[in-house]
Structures are given as C-alpha cells and as structure tokens.
Image (tube, rainbow, N blue to C red; front, top):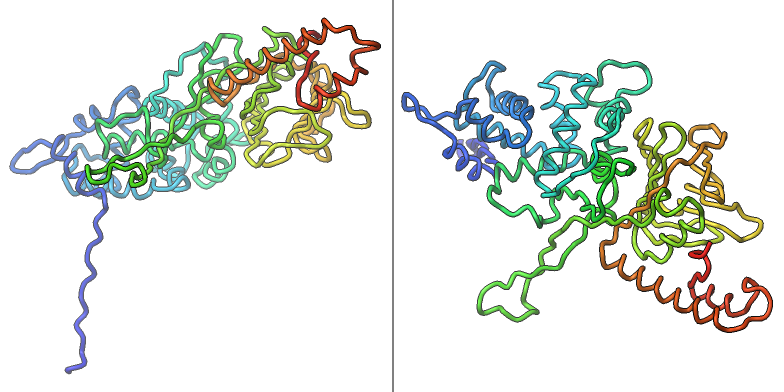
Length: 454
C-alpha cells in the first residue's frame, strides 16, 4: 500500500491570450440576470470595420468553437475566451490559417462555391489593406476581376461547382501561401493590440502591401487587386524592408552597445521604371529605363487577347551569356489562370548581341524556357502553354521595388552616362563608334552609351 501512488489530474492549459481576451470580454459584455454575455449585435458592431460581410461568419465560427450551437445569439465569458483562444491557436501558422479561414468562410461546411471564394478574396484583401495602412487607390479593376480569375483557378478545369478544404489548401500553399496573413493580423490587432500603430509592425504576421509611388491609371497593368494578390506570394525582398530600431532601455543602459535591436518592418515602395506605351516598345527603350536600377523589379506583360504574365526578378537587369537571378525569382501567370509557373534561381536570360545565343529575353532556363520574348519585344512564345505560336505583346510595365533611393541612384548614373557620351561625341573618333576601343572600355565598365539614342 505504501508504494501506491495517487494520480494527479493534469493542470488545465490556459491560452496565453486568456488575459487579453478576458479584458475585451469585459469591455463588450452586458449583465442581465446577473449573467455577463456579449450580444451578437454588439459582437458584430465591434468587428464590422470597413467590411460588413465579415462579422456574421466570424460570430458563427467563434460560437461553434466555444461550444455553442448554430443558433446562438450571445456569448458567455467562457464561450468567447475559449472560442477565440482556439481561433488564435489554429491561426498561428500560415498553413493553419488556410484551414482556419476556409472553415470560417464556408460557415463550417465541407465545401465552398465560386461565389464564396470571390467573397473571401474581397474580404481578405480589404482587411489586409486596413491593417497595413495602405491606400490602394486606382482605376476600377477590369472585368473579369482578379478575384474571379483567382476563384476559377482554385475550382480547376473540370467545371466543378464546389471546392473542398484540402483542394483549396493544396492550391493556396503553391500559389498564394500568405493570402490570410493580412486578415489574421487585423484580427490579432482587434483582439490583442487595440490602439497600436499600423505604420510599423514587427515581422510576425506582417501583411506587407507595397506602396505605389506613381499613380495607377486605367491603362496600367498593375491594378489594386493584382498588387494585393502579389503581396501574398512574392518573397520579402519585393514587398518589405527591415528597419533597425533600438530600445533605449533604462537610464542605466543608455550606451549604444547595450541597446537591444528589434526588427521592425515597413512596406517597400514601388516606382514605375518602364511603360511601353509611354516610353516606346523596343529592347533599347527597355534597356534605357531598366538597366542600372540596382534592385529587384516586377515586370508585367500583357500578351495576346487576355494573357497577363509577371516576372519578379530579385537582382538588377543585365545582359549575359548565361541565365541569372537568385532564389527569390518568380514567373507568374495572372490571366487567364492564376498560378506560379516557375520559382527559383537562374530564371532570366537576356542577350542582344552575342552571336550563337538566343536573342531577346528568356523567362525560365534556356534549356527549359517558360516564355521567350523576341529581340524587338513585340512577340512572345508561351512554352508553358505548349503553344509556340508567337503571341503579340500589347504592353509591358516594369516596376522597381527598391524605393526612391535606388531610383535616384539610377538617375544619377544615367546623368553621368549622358555626360560621358557627350564628351566622347566632341572627340573625333576614327571609324565606326561600335568598333572603337573607347566604347569597348566603357562597355566593360558597365556603361551603355547608345541605348538611349535609339
């Protein structure tokens, strides 16, 4: 009997968010018949914000997670705290958020319809814009909208009318893994960080949406929907920048060496480098506006009747005898179907003059091209589409993702090049300039002296 051990019940594990959730409950709750509860109307008013359609599925999801039935019209403290505790725990990872918000927007059903997916797209985008503090103003999106294309891409090519959670999550992990980061960050702010600034947010769950320095016009390929959906898939080098900040601490630790660095992230600024309608559609005009920009860029190409392609390049443009680009390069088809075509290093090949090599631009490895653009940038072959019939390139845009400082350095370099070219033009040079040794020296130094004159 002396060896018999009595079993102790395991302590109940409380959510680390219990205290914050309990405080919010006290703010919203009303007491009736000595029982505190939050009425459905009060709950919905608090979470309504700029999106009216979100509060209803959110209340139902939290009520079910907290132990209520579908007909609940109020939440007790335990139901509110437990429901949102589960909500925050399930949304702690990107993969978890995909399942969490699918379940919520589907009202707990096993599948979603095309209309459900479109509504989920618009709500997720709207709340991501709110929490990021980004004013996405621009022309009215073309029809069909990116939301429609996005939803149809998830549904597949088999005329499906419904999509289940597994199919959605599998597709989203490949094509837009951070689609719910913005909406979840908004939820965390409403639940745990009310009143905090949204201008700068720590890296955990940061819903970065690039800030556009140039106006988006009706003829722009980059509209507000496309910008947001790109922010859910492009690597960080395109969409956010980490700023060094310091916690000064107490008066006894004011020396710089003792300050604790805290990473704070900010949305990157995009600026228009090249617009074929405005600047002229040719390889030389493309080179003049894009070469020398020492930062990542996003190129948009309107091909054929409805095709829209994006080449996100994580290094500066250059001519080379081999493919280049680092691991953050992406080639994405936006229309007529949204999907990532290629991802990884060595996805760009650019050659104008080297003999024995393809002339023009190749997206994808030269041995396995995805898209090839001819030397005049007038036609493209869509290898991924298994159709090598040349398609007309109707428009090209290139956006620089390095901010104003990188753009200013490019402009300074271009000014220096022009001055050097003017000096050389004043000197009488024998023979053709293309054969002149001075030009060869300038080319070796990376100075292009004639593309702006063509």
